Image 1 (tube, rainbow, N blue to C red):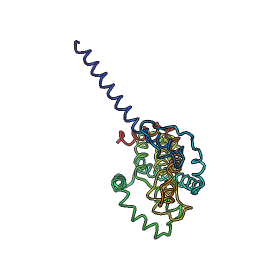
Image 2: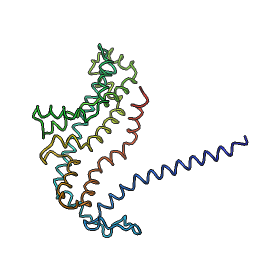
Image 3: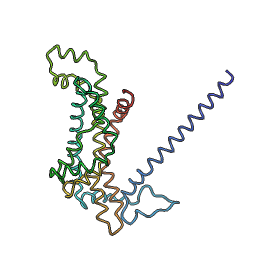
Image 4: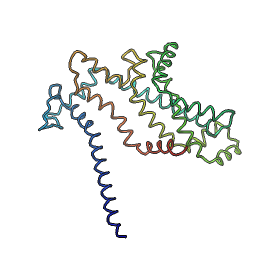
Length: 287
């Protein structure tokens, strides 16, 4: 009993240290973002005016023109539309193919089901850089280079999405499926009318994760697009630097473009944080 105050003090000290560590970590991560916002509101000549004794986080005057010029210097609106189209198409495709595959692996019985699933799952251990060149050669053989088909079709199949949804489908009660069969429901009817309506959380989680991943995808769109009309936002931002390859890049303009690019994913993240947690629970706990 006499050690109780000491234990409480030690616990309070550990909690205080943990909060200090988390606050310092948070500040470290948020500072570059705040500096990016500040830079996006500065003119070309004032970006590198930096005095340690008088750091100006809020520019004076505020140079809003960067957010106007970013749409004029390069076809930024075209990049935006391309990113939205590709992101929506890939997300819809991945969720659809993952749900169908997960339903087959979780609820149907056929020879070699588990072996096929684990072989499919093993593809997650192959780095994307290894398969990139063969897939690129395949796209070239099909004649799909510099088309939306090359941007979308290779990305609509994912072992991760199949695994995530399979884990959730396996937790659904078999009784519901048996009751639907007794009522004369077909396999497709069970999938469409029973499994999917009960899986809104898992489907939303996969949708959020896939859309965020595709929104910032850079390497694959860079490989398969040649014309400016097919490029997406991450490639468009790199295009800014190409314009200034013989001079100092306009960092204010580049930061304004980066912030405009980040707006959709920031909104998605703020309003759907719980689905990220659900994704971790589905893939990390339910084995």
